[in-house]
Amino acid sequence: MYVKYMSCLRLICARVHSNLVDRWLHPQSHGSQLKWLAAPNPRTYIGSGKVAEIKTAIHALDVETVIFDDELSAGQLRNLEKAFGGDVRVCDRTALILDIFNQRAATHEASLQVALAQMEYQLPRLTKMWTHLERQAGGKVKGMGEKQIEVDKRILRTQISALRKELESVRQHRKQYRNRRLSVPVPVVSLVGYTNAGKSTLLNQLTGADVLAEDQLFATLDPTTRRVQINNGMEFLLTDTVGFIQKLPTMLVAAFRATLEEISESSLLVHVVDISHPLASQQIDAVNKVLDDLDVELIPKLMVWNKVDKADDPERVKIEAEEKGAICLSAINGDGLEQFCFAVQAKLKDAMVPVEACIPYDKGELLNTIHQVGMVEGTEYTESGTVIRGHVPLPLARLLTPMRQRVTELTNMDKSV
Image (tube, rainbow, N blue to C red):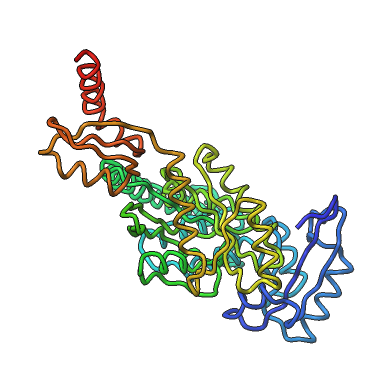
């Protein structure tokens, strides 16, 4: 977090690694230090006086892990671990987020993406594992060989290259899947937002799915898509995506490119916000920053304020949401879902193409598709077929081009008569 030109460091001392996430979220109950710096110290990030103060606390509290709420360089990590003692692990923000992702990865694709991000993070931070080995001996004639750390880096680069190739294969598979999905012109609505904002809960409420929805960071790493049908018969695909976070590590954004590309193919982005969170506005900014990096500014967006039932003053929040054009709901108990569906329908209509087409009577399946994915505003039965007036997605509008021309011909014939 940056305030004016001062950087804020939060440091947490944890005794049990399995509880790092909870202790990071709630540092006040586990021992923390806050330090204001005009600029980070290039050697230890914090000054020597604060290093000594923390070292005293480490020995007094029997600390095993120290977490910095910022990214540390390889040199800063080594210097801090040396200063604190060899048994104390120093962990920065990126390493902690990668640890959380590693715990949440439940599918092969997610595991690949997390493994790639972890290896890219480790590569510049490798240290020599065996202090008694300097170089590999090259024999009596040859000179000294490689350093052990050079061998480790070469092995890691090889593994990174293999993972990238495998993920590229996954990316191509996802692209083929999206192309098949686009052949059936059903609008795709993607849920985006800060982690733990309630996206999976909203998906479950609307579709009856059984997607994991827990009060924890990054419960969802793989996109999940389900079909939603509104009361008027219109259908759309709803996709739950990975949650964002402030200062999301760049290697994670790169590793999850195949997953995040699902967002760029959407007809509508629904930005879900935990409006009860005290840092809701900062979380909105963090999500918008990631979306800017994904180059999706041309895709229509709908702002949804979730967990309104947990807000201090729900009525005031609803008034403010109406002023800002946001939708208020509580995904956990279903309040506001009908209003949400109407808002999605209105947004999708704005992105659709107005059409008037004459559908032959032997094309009943096409007529059914128009009713499912489009918005029919008028129907007329003629000798040549059913004349439909309404709005449909662009791919379907292109498919209807010959039938739209047929309507023009029929109209001209009526005028001539």
